[in-house]
Structure formats: structure tokens, C-alpha cells
Length: 138
Image (cartoon, rainbow, N blue to C red):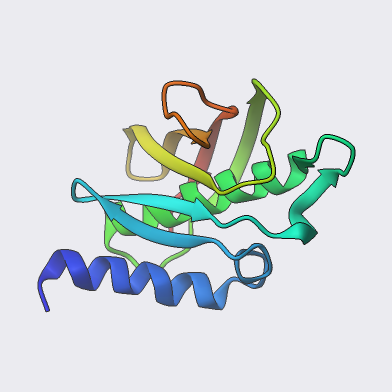
């Protein structure tokens, strides 16, 4: 097994150990050598049944978990980064379908990392939400 594949297998193992990630059904995929995250559609993730739309808290939890996992992947570490602050901007309704996410580490020092996260559905150029967070590294 190549090192890159082993890292993604480790992300799948980490996802299995995070109860909220399991509840949501988050998955880690590989795209161009980087992790990309998938939240498959599930009825229990719907917040507004009239639209229907994915609950904002589910989107926030998805992005937060994606950032933690991305940092673990980038550090190749089993230590779990602890969140310092988190800010999310909801840009449009997330329809009742799969949600994708990617993360970008803006700056990573010895103790703190700053991460940008983006969630989209059909078109990555039309995000449903973006978020920023700081994490304390293990």
C-alpha cells in the first residue's frame, strides 16, 4: 500500500472513531492527492423540511470535522487538533443531496493552525458555505 493510500485509510479509521462524524455519515475521499470530504444525503440531516434543506448545524459540524481530519492528514499525526474558534458563512441553501467539502491550511505553526473550509454541492464554484477556524495542535 502506498503512503498516500495509507493516509486516506487512516482518515477513514479516524472517522469511525468520531461519533458525530459517524452519525452524519462523513466520508474521506482522495482528489488530486488531497483529502476531499463527502456528506452523503440522509433524511436525518434535513433541517427545513419545506425546502428541503440540510440543517446549518450539520453543515457546520461537517466542515469542522473536515478541518480536523485535514489537519491530522497534513501532520500525519494521530493527535486530534482542538478548536479555538470557528466562524461560518452560509451562502445559499444546501439542497437535499450530497455535500462536498475541502480544506486549505492557510498557516500552520508549531502550536496553532488556521484553516479555510468550503462546502458545495453540484458546482464547486458555487459554495453553500465557507468557514474559517483556528486549531490548537497536539
